[in-house]
Image (cartoon, rainbow, N blue to C red; front, side):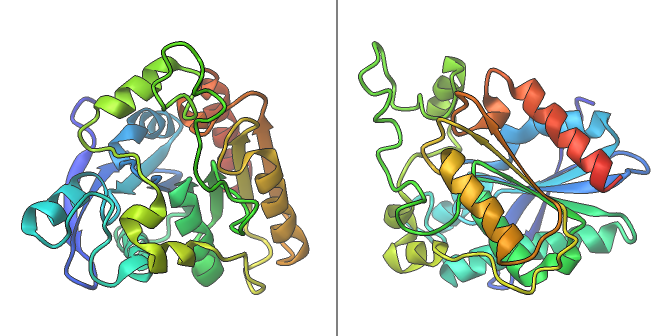
Length: 287
């Protein structure tokens, strides 16, 4: 399927043109919506989208405000100064822009179940959407996430554990596969910067929030993280899982911590195992 994905656009509620991608199949068992990470973009999930297609699922993924092709267009138009800047409406509009993607998916696929997948910053967006719109999703997967409170969520210096390794590039924290860091550094649509720097402090501090009571308790939830992930690792993810169980009353929460895995488990040396766990979760809980 070399003609996939299909590239499309929509204008969000502030008029920002959002580029998104669709990997459709005929009569999908469900749809998976992918929300990428900070400095990341949707096309870095091609391999995951194709695996999902092969298993019977269609996929949608947008380049969030300030990211990928969306971000490049914002800078080129003069609406923002640099990649990562969110533009009008700030972080609240950025959260809602991903929900607008949800609305498009549901309108185009009436009656088809929808799974929300978020990685890193995308998992933070997903946590916000679960807080507000849990009835709109049939399951959710949070990759490379954390409980979003100071002292638990990693706050910079992500590569310090590996900085003294011979030939360190600064991207070792992403994956044990050295090619992943090289590709990230060479990709014209990625960037590496702290959220506070590119979003601005007033926006960045709004990334600190916790799961709310009122989320529907039968929402199946999967957390996947590496034990060496400097964002949340085992502690941040188990705390998040327990918050969903104990505070929110969710009945079906699974947390998988991959030994020695780093931040991008879907680009790790054992990514096939990670994808297999994802597919098993969706099959068991959705379709």
